[in-house]
Length: 369
Image (tube, rainbow, N blue to C red):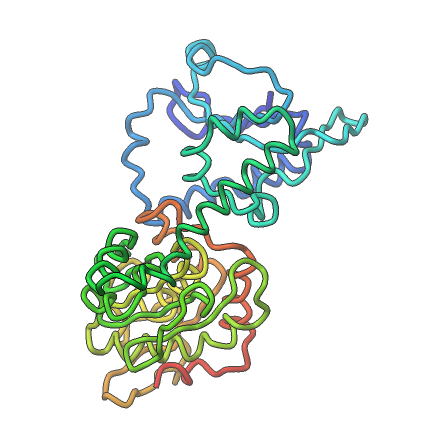
């Protein structure tokens, strides 16, 4: 139902941008169309594995769906219209119909899930989907979700009281069973859940640990030359804890990168706070398209380096001062997401990176010495 546009792809494919006129007004359509090619170029340069797209026999097209919409048969739609659909599903109902231009507004489509999900994760939903979907009313559904999330937290929080009356080997086994981490490409950075950061067991796999959890989430962990606990509250509860500690985090990271140490960044799940810190480290220290640290004069960030912006470090090595932008943080997050799709830091945390790198009073050289 979109406006006519230029076909830029295969002659046999309809590569026009289509958007439903009932949910995407003409002005917004024009704005999307104007940046479409730039977004395509960004995707091609993102590092994501796009080989699956070669299997497509027809172009992709977005379809919007919200509560109250009629269900459709995807297979018949593809056969009839000659495209593969990407269903953009919103949990919000259409709440306001603007009669002019026949435009339907759907509020709060799906962002800021920490504000409305009640702690429910995708894994928990699929594990308990029958119980959740069987609830006859919203109030009862909320109660089911609360019970599921609470049970999950009770299980996870047991790490702070790991069978006090058993032998230490039982504690280690419990930690190892629940620990989950992944490596970012082939570089020495790892992201994991809080079980990975339990000392001393964490040092069986990692040389250094950056623990983003609060002391309530993971108590009895002591800072040291190879262990750093940031004590950052989850969600939007923290104000400046992340921003104020980034300089120290980068100094800690730089010291261990210079020794070729493996570094774990951990939080409760590894998907939010730890991922945010990992984005900061990638943007600050790593080459743009590689998994190697920028120890030489090769530029990083946007590929710009002003004269005399190189600083000499104590160990004799040199590292360029990066010229960063929001696009660099997006690129680094894409790098992480290609390794772990569930890695999804909140906008609240990502904004802290913007504040630190793009408007902070802390000089860049302060964390490179």
